[in-house]
Amino acid sequence: MMRQSESNAEIGGMQLLKMTAFLTAVLAGCQTTMPRLELAGKGQEQDQVSAWLADLNRQGDHAGAVVVLKEGQVWGQWFHGVERGGGAPVGSSSMFRLASVSKQFTAAGVLTAVAQGRLGLDDDIRVWLLECPYEGVTVRHLMQHVSGIPDFYMDLPIPDRGFLGIGDVAAALPQAPPMERAVGAAFEYSNTGYVLLAALLERVYDQPFEELMMQQVFGPAGLECTRVWNLFSTEEDWPNKTWSMDGTESDAPQIEPTELDGVAGDGGTFMCAEDVPRWNAWWTSNAAVPDSILQQAFAPVDLPDEGLSDYGFGWSLPDTAHASHSGAWLGARTWWWRSRDGQDAVVVLNHTGSKQAVEMGQAIQDSLW
Picture 1: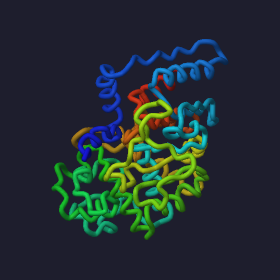
Picture 2: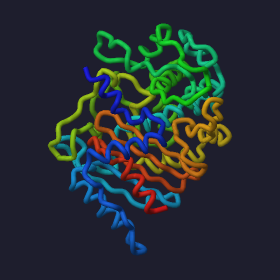
Picture 3: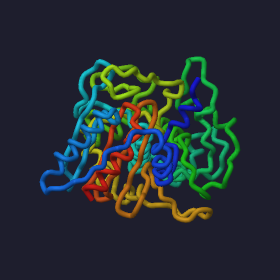
Picture 4: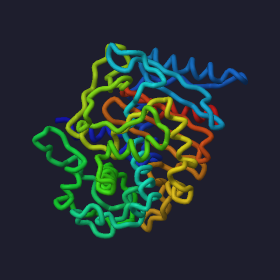
């Protein structure tokens, strides 16, 4: 049983702007020094980024995929390491666990349901989660991490099957801890909130979360190598799936899923580099969700206890022109930063427990913009 340590490892479970400062302070004392990325020479930037990433890989600090978009196009992409111990080299079709970056996909599922008229952002969640004891919580509150519902799911008892599922989290609501703050009063990052959104979507569509996300979101978005996976999935393995590894070496040991990996919504999405530009463009404008609904994902909420929040729907909002999110679970270390107009993005997909994935992504964006 490693649930507490695994909970602590969930870097996505912290407000991103505060998390970045935390990571910088903590990791400074426990990692090798990351070489600086200094770009010089017009037209040679791609080569310099390539050399820098190769150096990080040689140091054992990175393996996986890095994708950079500029002016809406792939400006550069780089691949290092293997998909699993003794496996094929990482490539553009290798599918990486996104950890908490998955929350933007869950948010997209909700926005799709709203666009279809199946639910409203300001609906009380008890319309669908009948067992919920908390009053006045809306879908929007869950999306913005301001519901006041305690983040309780990682402390639930594990069923006899050996792992927890989305339905178990919803079923535990009547016995869940009391609220610690008023609905809509303050930001508190909540993995539980996004698992409950997955449970709500399952009831809206009367389908398993994995299935509905494929049919309602991934397929219509044109994503070719993106999927939800958890311990309830029919397939344990599939071509190009990366496995979490404890290190960048080609024979590094594999990190196995835990008893918490039957849930999804807060995590559970896998994606390849080929789908990055398609998904990045979806958040600017798409055929499934009108812009009037889509842009609400990037609208911060004014909280009576804290002022303006820096979180939308599955995205942190560092400033008015950009959005970002990180994730960490098992070996996954993910960073997604994008301009709100969809023209620029830096995406780091790492499956080897890198302590520098966020720092790498930020170094690239700081050097190019």
